[in-house]
Image (cartoon, rainbow, N blue to C red; front, side, top):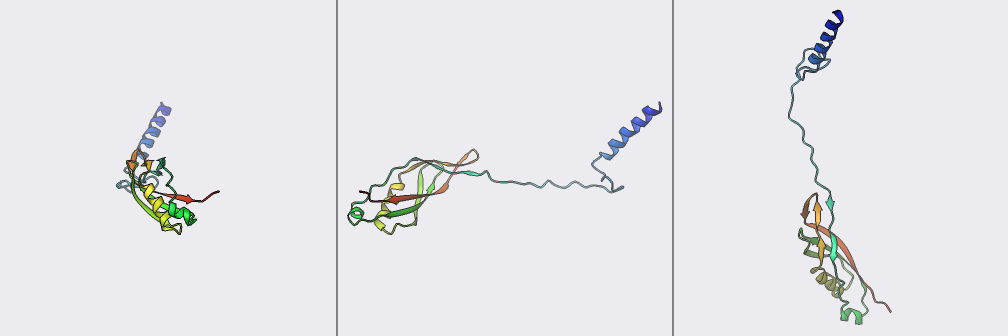
Length: 134
């Protein structure tokens, strides 16, 4: 019978120390629960992917004057995959080539960027290289 009494008191002792209203090892001090701390983060961006991207025609005036170069375009791809805005980040040195690249990019189509399950607007950078070959 003594064993059964000791076992019962051990269970009671465990229940008493597991109580959330008392701090363990702190005597009779009361623990007051506070509001939770929320930690949030945005879904990572899955960038847009080119879907229908055509090469701009080489402008005849640039071809005749043997203009070459790379146009670095920055493009805002809308959540529906269409192009919303086109900027020339770094020009080729030829306004004719820069304009040809930017104008062609306005008609491109993309698979839109995503944050988690939602399609979002996102910016991409695409270089367009104009090169004369023999």
